[in-house]
Length: 149
View 1 (cartoon, rainbow, N blue to C red):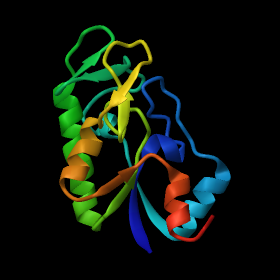
View 2 (cartoon, rainbow, N blue to C red; view 1 turned 60 degrees about the vertical axis):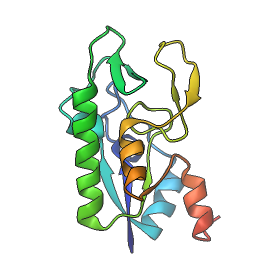
View 3 (cartoon, rainbow, N blue to C red; view 1 turned 135 degrees about the vertical axis):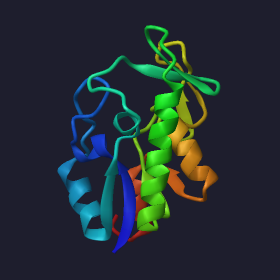
C-alpha cells in the first residue's frame, strides 16, 4: 500500500489554528484508508506553534500572524519536518489542507486577512513540490486516479 502524507486536520486531529479540525467526510477517509497508508502531519504544530493559535497568512516569503508576529521560522521548521516524513516513508504524494499558508497548493490567502485568494503555495506545499512530491488539496482527485470514483 502506497504511503500518502495527509494534513492531520483532514484526518480529524484538532490541530487547526482555531483548535478544531477540517475532517474529511467518513466516506472519503474510508476510501483513502483502503488505498493508501495515511501518514498524518501538521506542519504548524511540528514547527512549534500552539493549538489554538492566531491565524497566519503568507506575505511573499514570510508568514505573518494576524497580530503582526513573524512566524516564518516555525512554518519553515514544520515544512522540513513534513519533508523528513516524506523521505522516511518514501512518499510521492500529499493531500494537504487547501488555502493554508503552510499546506495550500495553487491558491492561498493573500496576507491581508480579508479572505482574498492569490495564486501560490503554502510553505510546506512549496517545499514538498520542490522535492518532487505531488501535492493536492483534492481527495476526490486522488481517488479518481486510483479508480475509486
